[in-house]
Image (cartoon, rainbow, N blue to C red):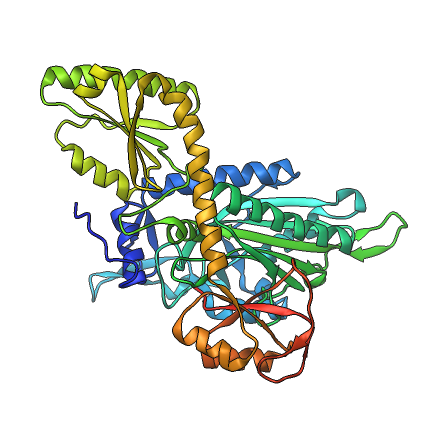
Length: 491
């Protein structure tokens, strides 16, 4: 396969699209806007899924599954919700086809029209809260902590593999609580889980905050988010956690009997991350040679490659690598041997560089003689020789070092590309020349937010929940501002 990639500085978008395909992660499907996630790409998503699932279950959440199809009437019960999702909905109107003699094909059978049209799940708040009405009667039934792993459909006009597709995979949590305080605590608890996962497992530093009214989830009281900065200076919303208040409980009449015997509406949350995280992983760490994976998520942490000039050398080298591989596996290191005889070592090196395998170990005749191995780090593109007897202990120390190195690189990039704008002219000049995150004062109005978006394409990524609240004047209107907010151009 061709190994060359468009350089990031020449065309970041083309680089990303080529990398997704050449690293064997995903490809476009026959259905416009949808993707086929290939085994290597799906194995990365599985690792994400496994770790997040563990974190959810450690905090008392349980998995369930709800229908893909949602009655159209459900969506209209929460006004903001239907307004927010209406334009993205795919709708099922009929349930049967019939043969068409004129065209020799099939057509929708007009007699098989559904009594009520069905929405293909864009998100599950409505169908889940309709179900919760049957599950919740008393304070004894609370809290209800449920998560589901599923696919959703949002009919996107402009699509890009992993980042924005008409169908994607995700998890969505939906919880019900006795008090407002409990629901708010849950919302922030999930935000902490997402932050920890992104920073410790994905090695992606994030900014945490709350969304503006314009940017919050349709139907939520408050939306909290984690925002990551990609290598082209654009922000990516990596995860959201919504405090729903009693909005959906009221819409679906979900009440509970309190300890005092009163009937009250429950308090809710919802939250989710998706296969968009694979896109975040690519754009945070990868380089012009291909994918760069943090060891915690790499399907293969160490690839072992034999060098040989004859059948005898091949057998001897392979036998040696099998012993090393066995030792790695016994120490919970994910390793594989590329024993293919019909591919040259240089071709294999390029392939695993493209796939982002964190460590490559090469053993040839001279290494066998000297009892050494050659180690190559993908994150720094460095190689060196160590004693074979030290290889397991060395790799056990090296993998967390690589993980931390990627996080520190990301943190450095984020810090270097985060600025403060004290005037609208300064703000506009930053986004005219460059991308990145910009702190600036804002008067809190939707009108000012829209003006900035229309004139610069920068949106409020979040109102930070960490850091000092320093009052000032809005850069656009000069009106009072309670604190700086963070702007950026976004995916």
